[in-house]
Every structure is written in C-alpha cells, then in structure tokens.
Image (cartoon, rainbow, N blue to C red; front, top):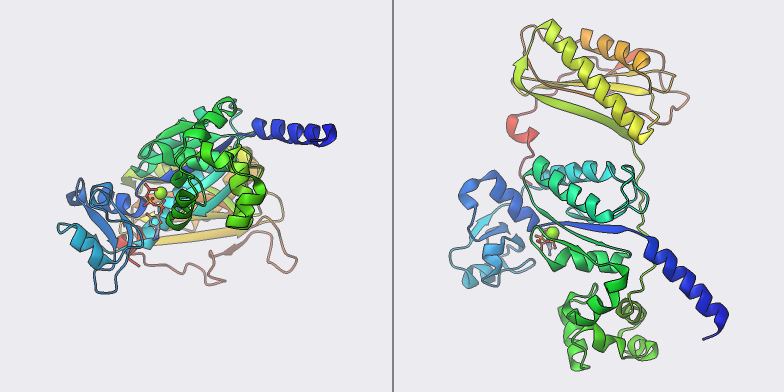
Length: 393
Ligand code: DCP
Ligand code: MG
C-alpha cells in the first residue's frame, strides 16, 4: 500500500475511532407494550398479530420465542409450535406513542438520530447536549429513563461505528448493554458468529456457511474480490465489517418543529391560584427546553385536558421569537384566560412553542388561533380515554 493512501486510511480510522455511536433497540417491542398494558399477559407466550388464517406474527414475547415463534411467521404455524400462544391484536397508535417518548429522551442527548424503525435508532453522541465524555454513561441514562418513562426495557450498544453499535445492542438482549471499544473491536468481531453480522439474514448466513465462514475471523480471511464476486455490493461491506471499518455517518433528516412540555396532575385542579401556579411552572420548564434546544419559534400553544378527557388547544402567533420568560408568561396567561375551567377541573396542562418559520401571509400579532383547526375559535375535540392512550389499529 502506498504511504499516502495508508496515511489517508489511518486518518480516517482515527476519526472513526473518535466517533461515539449508540444503537438503542427496544426489547420484544410490540409484545412488551401489550404485556405492560395487560398484566394477565406477563410471563406468558404472547404474539402480536391478527388471529386468523392469514394472520402473521409481527412480534413474539420471549416466552413464545422459546417455542420457535418469531416475527413474520404465520399465526397458524406459530400456534402449532406453541399451543398455549396468546394472540393479541396490535395497537399501533400506542407503539407510535412509545416511539415518540423514546425519541424525546434521545433528543435530550443529541439531535443526530437515525431511526431504523419505530423501536430502534442510532444516536451520534460524539458531542452531546449533556457534555458527557463517556457514551456508555449516556446509554445507561437513556435505558434508565426509557424504563422510568415507558415501563419498558431497551437494549443498547455502544461503539465507534454503526455496525458495531448495532451488533452490540443485540448482544446482551434483553435489557442489555454492550460496549465495543475500538481496541477490542477486532477480537470482538473475530469471535462473532456470522449470523450476528448486520445484513446477514438467514439465507446469507447459509451461503456463508457453505463457504466455510462461521465467524468474523473466518470472514476476514477472504479477499475483497472474492466477497464481491459472491455477495455483490454487500461483499464490500462484509469485507470492511470484518476489519471493524464502517464510516457511514448517522444520518438524520430530522428538523425540530416544536418544543414543549406537559404535566398530568396527581389530582385534577380547578382553583384559579392552583392553575396560575401550575401554568407558571410549565412556563419555566418550557423555557428550560427552549434554552436547551435553542428552538426559535413564533407560536405558543396551550393544551388543556379536562377531568373527562376532553381536550382543547389554544394558540397565539407573534412576530417575535419566543425565547424569554417576559414574552412567554404573559402570552400563556392570555391563553389561559380564554379557558373556562370553573366547572371542569383540569387534568393536564401543556405548553409548546412551534412555527419556526413565519410565512408572510400568516396572521401575526396576538391573534388567537386554534391548533390545526384554522380559525374556528374554541372548537373542542372530544377525546375518549381509550383513544387518548392510542386505539387499536
Ligand atoms: N416487526 C414487525 N414485523 C417484522 C419485524 C418486526 O411488525 N417482520 C415489528 C414488531 C416488533 C418491532 O417491529 O416488535 C421491532 O422489531 P425488532 O426486530 O426490534 O423486534 P422486537 O423489538 O420485537 O424484539 P427484539 O427484542 O429482538 O428487538
Ligand atoms: Mg426491538
């Protein structure tokens, strides 16, 4: 290898080693949500899917996996493998809600987030919002917060590249945490069964086995030419993976559209003084979040959920960027004055700032609008308790 190309590669490797990437993956995601929300299902073999001739398992609890039940399997086959299998229908709104919750947690650490599906994402925490040097500490914190806020467990993998972070998150599932340090990467890969490599599904694994490749060490013995002949473009990736090389960045197409916070009270509130105090605290928390995210928005939205789960939102758009208490507090109070809660105790209060770009033709200067409802003032949205938690799909 020429010295210049060696140096180039070494520089790239060193940059690589400096990256800190976490891959987070929820454990038995759909099934875990169903077990959480119906304790009768805890500890039992559960599959989420449509219980019928043409039904397919979307995920299975670990108890069911022991019988060979797995994602994408026909429900009929799954029942044959596990006669006591409990089939529950999916509640996709709930899964989306949990996904949003975990993304909110991720955003407290970094905005460089690449979701792979509802329940997994890469996070680049090389530089992060909490100034934490050790990515593993962030991973521990994220796992703890996910458990606290969703009552669900996640597994996390930490390394200097996406490939190893992804493999690591799967390595000690469930509730796992695995760190692959750059110094240990080649040894880790050498012993890694080929089935565990990213992009190696059942079929590719079988082909690898036929070529005598069962682990990373064996994969490393084959030339780039040989691997691309056998596996096409993926051959290059396998060649690099075997050497711990994966430069792919964590790609985010995410643009923050709003920042907000909300609180459900232990007891519903209806006294004016109580409401004022709670509103004040919500404003302070909102300000903290604005500070942290440096979000620059023009619309303040108040959300109020009443004791009977009816919900209203009120918005106000102004010319100024809403970042100061002196601007936000009076606006929040103005919005609150429009809400009649004397006869309807309040269960939840929320505030958010949105509308990062102000378009010319949008009404400005203190006009009250309803959220996403055009100009129908005080249109009320009836939200049934069930729907508000996410109905079935
Ligand atoms: N999923 C699906 N159909 C598939 C695979 C997955 O509907 N063929 C859904 C159901 C899963 C969710 O996506 O709960 C996440 O997929 P994962 O592969 O991460 O699987 P789990 O989270 O269920 O399990 P694990 O603990 O192995 O991550
Ligand atoms: Mg998962």
